[in-house]
Amino acid sequence: MAGQRLPKPDIGPANGLVQSNYRGSDRSVNEAPGFTGLRHIMPEGCGFFTQKQANFARWCPLMFETFEHTADLGLRIRANELPALFADAARGLFSMIVPDLDSVRLVDELEFTIEGPVSELLLFDWLNELLYTYETRHLLFAQFEVQLSESGLRATARGEACDDHRHQLDHEVKAITYHGLKLEPADDGWLAEVIVDI
Image: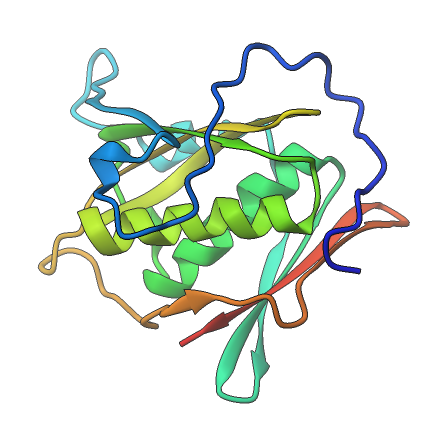
């Protein structure tokens, strides 16, 4: 049921989240309080992270799949823990846009903070802000670190600017929808479904 608060995950204290009521309005992305800064990152000894390094992912293995839904496209995510589910949902979203996530170099880093109880609506807001960032700043992301608390979400996304010469784009994701949106406990952890407008 939309808006229903789910059981609180065992994820520790709030850890100083910054309040943000940004939900993808017509304000410029630089003004949005959900964004706390973009910086260029270069690990020692190389110009970008290898995919093997990227997949150190504390949220491995990836557990998402897409499915057809009339004229839209669905994303189904399974994970043992909620932070892993939110991270894999983000990767699933960008896999719709650029199927070969290995082609996305991890040279830029952006932090997000979103306030709200842990629910399907927080998942919607998270994916919506990622899509808004892609649309306004043309940034592709391939790695995500997510922390959740009673107050909301705090996450780091890594990737790079879209390059038409290297990135083969697939679907044009127009919007994240509320239709069929769900986040619920499952036998092996958590299950979520999101349908996007393409």
